[in-house]
Image 1 (cartoon, rainbow, N blue to C red):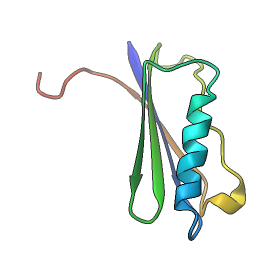
Image 2: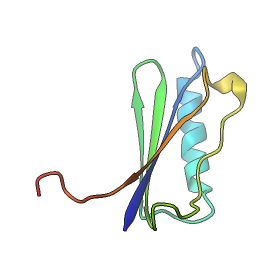
Image 3: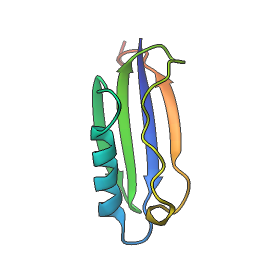
Image 4: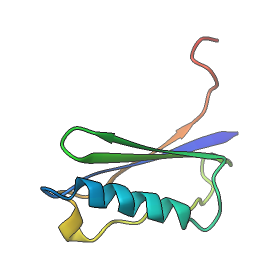
Length: 89
């Protein structure tokens, strides 16, 4: 089974690049390497990290921590999904 973890945060005013680099560094420091990882950004200095793991849905997996409060505007949002394969069938 493949499990995808999503981590999303919104940077404090003017700190989008810093949050992006913080997330990149924390992803590189995970306790073990995911099958795949992707770093994305969106308007309003939002940063999204996706990691994919060969694991059961309820397995304990390495996750990115909360950044320092001054770097973000709100608590980090986290989601966990089970992969069901390609959308087209």
